[in-house]
Length: 580
Image (tube, rainbow, N blue to C red; front, side):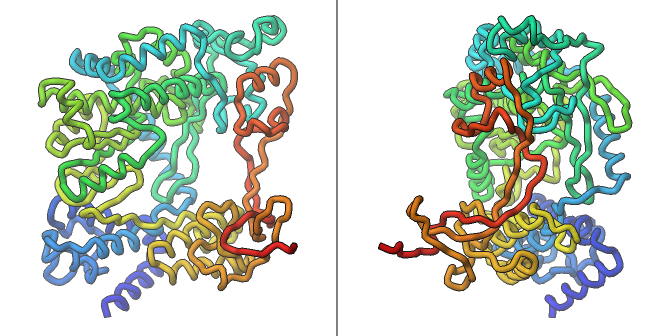
């Protein structure tokens, strides 16, 4: 009876509210649930768009599941993680469908971007915070200083777009360079194979007034709000990549910082979140608009003991941004997420502030380091700290203009989330998200690939009926797909028995293995051929992903389009006995 009523409720509300019920209203249930789990009880106000169950503080919708988590309003001592996962799965499934946000939402995000930067204060780190920063990162920044002064920063081009519109190999022509960069990163050292080519191939130098601003661009994310990306000029992006490549290994390889901060492996954060959901001794904190709230004044203050590093960061930092309407504004923030150094630098800042807050209570940095082992970790703006010190840490973060996202911060209950891992009392409660609209008329390569991935994830956690429905949509256009391994590059089903699938298979005598025929994504690289000193420099610099790819001087960079084509791929699921 309850299931039928819930189904009727969904149908009725979609009919009267449209898909916004699925993408915007329904996710409020998960938000209210998480607030209740953290607080220990729910309030009717946690679910403003849902009628309450009779005599209960939770909604009538899905009350069968809610009743296994809460009694009247309080969290049950035997709250069922399976019910929690079911509520989150149903309410969050449509939340992250990739679509263009309404113009009003785009304008709101742009206003927020401008207002956040305008309201940033000129923060200066306290003496205690600066000493903590040196305690945590002094050795690494000493090494980075040596690298900068020896002209050995491993510069390289990123795969993405640039503010000056250069793509792939075009970036190696590097026609522009700024005066600020030249002081720290001489063009002849970093853009040419030898200074002997400088006279013929020197760039156009830009003074501070001529520099290109970072380009702020909205891109589709969800119906609720778009994603704002900041596209850096080629010259800045090139040096930022080098500083990031030099800094990250130093931080992850140092005996002090390696246990506190990470950039390439999210598993330690997820493991700690899992432990915190059981013991409640570890809290997970989340920051809102993290990169947009780290001021340049705070960064330059913290890095002040290493003036060459400060100069290097400043040289490749975009000091202004241009908005879609053409308006240019000066930036107080250190960098937006489009900068390659934004992620490591902001993580260092968050780590230092959180660690200093805990050390101020414990009284000794070395004792704090020992105390935090296994219960402190920063990955970007995902921060994990001991629960006992969480409120002190949150206060310290907000003291430097950072904003704690209280709806995604968990200290008291048994729910924790960090780096894509969601847990309740030691049990994973992650939902599977639908990323593409199944009803769209546009059947593109990414649409098929995303739906296949979604179906496999759903089947992996027991939602086989939904997986089979999605499978029917995909195979209606592509025809039957085979069973494949999870690591397969081809489209196929990881949850099906190979014996139940129609598949073309063959034995490849050259490679001595069985192959199956299926669709594979093809991503052609941007074609632009370079030669002369720029080609020589790229070859010497090793700045290509495949060292045996002979065409790297003709095509490179992130693909401008994606297609799917049928071809043969190796498989271990199907076995053929080769003919003798």
